[in-house]
Image 1 (tube, rainbow, N blue to C red):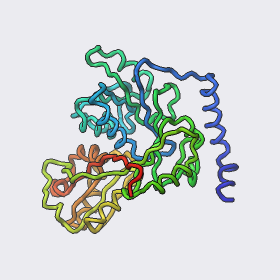
Image 2: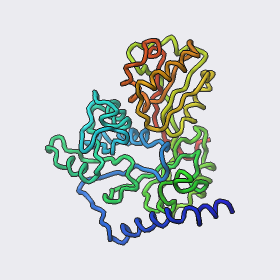
Image 3: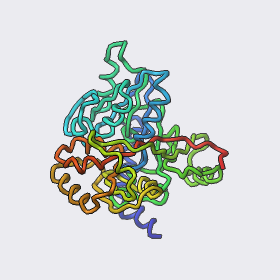
Length: 335
């Protein structure tokens, strides 16, 4: 009853705004543009934390042997405007943390940012033939209906079922769950590695997709810790204690993973995509000095922004590491 009241009364204005916008595109009153090369959109219907960047990286690994891949993002959190091709030595303030992470991981591909997606695609199509991409991945673009992608991939966090959530601002849904009908592929992310076929079937029933919609399941795989700064001292990796420092939407998966190796001495959380400042450096330093022997562990995305925080003392830098992550597909029939 409570969910019904919230959905039907409190969130009614936002519901109708979304409904009307989709109506305009569905009936071609507002136009979606198609382009002459394959465009894959990777997005979600919730705000943050569904694992888009690891999945985009999975697509890059899978496709770059056959295609000249480009990744186009808005560059959320950057302080620049307009079109920009990402370079390895850029900062997160210039291009955004996620595009910078992808570029540093895959320096051979084109990664670019533009808040106007059409302009971004058309700029890429105007590249010289020898550099022009043959496939474009649009990051976080499910709601961007001005472009009609060749394939719509929508991610859902397994720990946050959409049927139990609400629209913004009360919940985390940024779009109507019924819009999953536009998805060509739905990927349930951050699944337990031991998920079996029965669990997958229950999830498919829970989502309630139209017949024929493909559903896949992925889990996150962590790699060995990597220093955030060159002065890092790897002896801290053998500490019994860790400080978890994050600025992402949902750090619970990382926290759970770390508990297998460390006792979490303390947790310092900032809002998602937070741009770290000198004031934050003092806060981090004060927090870390309470546990002088503890390893400081952060996420791969946060490392892109923390690495520019030069005002951190070397002693703190020497303790700071991040864990690279990778999206791994779960096969049907596994037990």
